[in-house]
Amino acid sequence: MNRKTLFWDLTLKLEAFTHTVPVPFAVYYAIITQKMEPNHWKIFIALCLVFATGIGLLGTFIRHLLLKYLFAKIEKMKLPSDLNSSFTSEEKEYAKSVKILLFRYPLIEAIIIVIRWLSGVIPISLLFFYLVEYTPSVARSAIFTFVMIAPISFVTYYFISESSIRNLFDLPQFKNVELQEKDIPKFNYFTRILVAFFSLATLPFVIFSYILYSLTTGEIAVEDPMIPIVTVSFIFVIPLIVCSYVVAKSVNEGLNETSRSLGELAKGNFDVIVTPKSSDDFAKQAFYLNSVIGTLKNMYAEIRNLNEGLEEKVTLRTDELNKTLMDISKLKVQQDGDYFLIYQLLNPFAIKDINSKSFFVEHFLRQKKVFEFKNQRYEIGGDINISHTIYLQDRKFLLFVNADAMGKSMQGAGGALVFGSVFQSIVQRTKTDPGFKNVTPEDWLRSNLQELQLIFETFDGTMLVSLTMGLIEEVTGKLYFLNAEHPMIVLYRNGKANYLFPIISYRKLGTLGAFPISEVNEFQLQPKDILFIGSDGKDDLLSKNQEGELEVLSEDESFLEIVENTKGNLESIVKEVDSLGQVIDDLSIIRISFESN
Image (cartoon, rainbow, N blue to C red; front, side):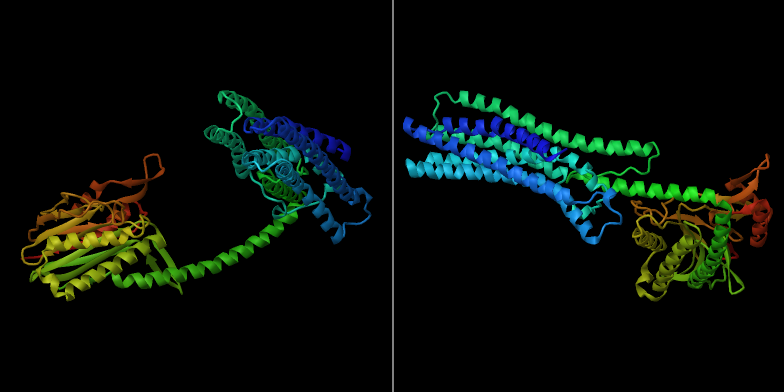
């Protein structure tokens, strides 16, 4: 596209719009809102004709100068084929400035048309006041005319100019001129559509508002108001169609450019370049698409190079892998150090502090995660056993808890560490605070389980703990216990093993929205009774089925049989569990035997 073709294309489109929409609006608007003497009308019309013609010719001449200036700068740019060497820094900066000017040209046309209207409306009004007399209706009409016409003219001139100059971006001079996203003026579609709707709404709003005002003041020059209302409504259809068309065309041109580039990319053409041709969102997308295409092109080149020298690459990758393995070994040592620290922190909380003549307590704990640190083997996991002797209402109680924090290795150990530290704090508070002398065992269990629940709720459901917690009165053997989604307590009495079914089982600690702790389970123990409180590690075993395939077996009834077969011996129970299959979780059991009253 040459300068002459672009000039006539722009001039015909822009001036045709101006004399089809804004000018008829302004003329009709002035006729119906003014009451003048015939000789005054002659002066007013003459002024309008002179200034409209003069400003129109002046605007066209300015467009001619602008395009001449723009094309002169483009012609000074060197074509890539004319260069024997690469661009100098000055040539690159010059080319960028010309391309940025191309992006700004539509805004220049839009601003000029607003200035043209100001240059016509203001002088016409002032000369009319000087030649005839000051007329308030003419002054008000001039203000309303500019407010009505300027927005729709600005929007339409911008979109038409932007559409007309898009082809200039395909000139060879701009082929290798690269801009950054920040270099392009921003006028996104949210703002574009908002401004377009505002300009369309301003046109009828201003006209009808002033018609109503003219009716109330008696300045309107027609007797039937429906005639101007219908006429203005009919004329308004033209800018509505034009504005909608130019906006839709702008969107369509951007989509077509993006679709064309994606189509070439789908064919495997990685040399395609998406050229930004407007200051909208499609220009931003062009930068992103070019980045994606460049990445794909590099990946394709790398894959081709790998195929061409595969053997050499394999050797290189092997060396890199060996180095990576060495790095992993170093990280393993560091990780084991972290595990050891967790072990050191968690170990003091697994306490058995019992002073009882009636009860004998045994703990067994084997965590799933085994690691080595300084040639020593250690274990960490989420299971924990704790037992204490405490006093409530001047009565001696055996306190026990078996807990299982959800998660493996560090996650489970972290939950057990938090639980152990909080629970030990509760125990020490109970032993030292005189206020607990009057607390019943039921209230102690309820309040402390609720306190633990509130603490674990702060982790937003990422740290859950199941548990069985209970108190056994030293003298009477009365058992009080709570269960939070934990395996049930096993009672071994007279050679028979059975579960102690709780009245209610609460949700895991840390469950969001869990119900408040209300009821406590009770059970009367008899001499020679044995209790087993354990996690689900004793039930979940990896074993082979009849087809020889490994599967996880979880049968609660099997543990009852193990207790009966071993006559309640803890060491034998663990050996029997190990013989049935591979334990795939942390394994913890508390054995409490009631020796006598």
